Length: 487
Image (tube, rainbow, N blue to C red; front, side):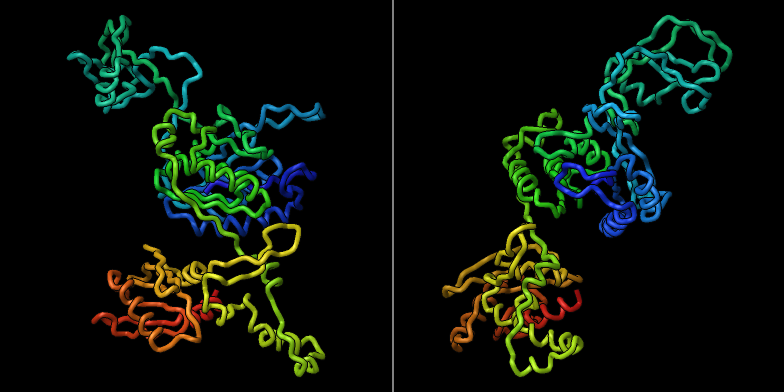
């Protein structure tokens, strides 16, 4: 997980989101999200939280509380910006912090390297303190014994590799070895072109300005974060997505990803950016040589799904009361109003109108797609909502048409059993012949899958005797209601 939550500034700023919080409010906002985030991490995973001097004194104790002080790994220093602010009575802040925690001690880090800033040079190949394992090495059939109080820097295996790379030489230089013997020559090695990365990340930019988003994280920063603690195919998450840098970089690096954003800029910044990434985005880390090898015009592609989650305000907008004059006389106090609210709203689509599931592909709710304006009626993905509530691991989805009716088959597994979820359009006007054809079509489509449990919406004549095997047939509507109550 990588998150860059809104910084807690002393005053409002010209950002696309709020940055002026009371310290307690800001801490609470982070606390509940971090706890949920921790539950989503695997035992081998890590989390990075970006903050500045306004929030670092809050973030560190929060992370210690939630992840455990023993799982603190680094406070990484990152470069804020090259832009200089007005001269004040203090020095302009030049750095920000990246708190790096693991979930458990099972987490691992992939070594990262950067080009050396200093010129490479030849160095005597010995290090402080005697070490019996590295007292002697052989170079070109010549045995060398380590200097007194020292040991050879590399093992014989590493020395052999460095010889092949042309990075070992023998020079004239007198020294006394650990046994008191004098030598006239000593081995040296050529420094690598790269040095291992430490917790000072000011060598790369912390921000970028490619998306017209004031606090856009730089792609090279996220590249270092993601490559250091994950491998190709792993899952990366950011639930303060902002301009979408985390998901853009994760996709370019061959990772799976989940991004969560609640701001309006999801539509204007994140969504267009991720579409561009699928079609091959030439900016950012796309220019890095190692990235070009796997992410280029020929290999770019893939797919993602974005979902608008129902908000509390959406729920209120979708409550529809049925006019009932006889009951209005009873609504004389608040208690009775609350008591009858369930009865009065039983036909509301918000509470799952069973009758509307006759066409599950056209179920509509009012949705707030904007912070301003009226709610918009939109088709809701009822099948996917049901599968989420069911907790099914989906293996295959297929759509079919039979007798002019649309069918959706969702095949998957749960608790070591195979499941099939069948949604189709049906009508109260179906004849016996319609039900027979419906049953035959469902059995035909599910034959290769051989499910143990089958969910079907509406009336269905499918029986437990399924092509010679015993299955359990369940009604989607009944299960949907129970799952919603449980959720």
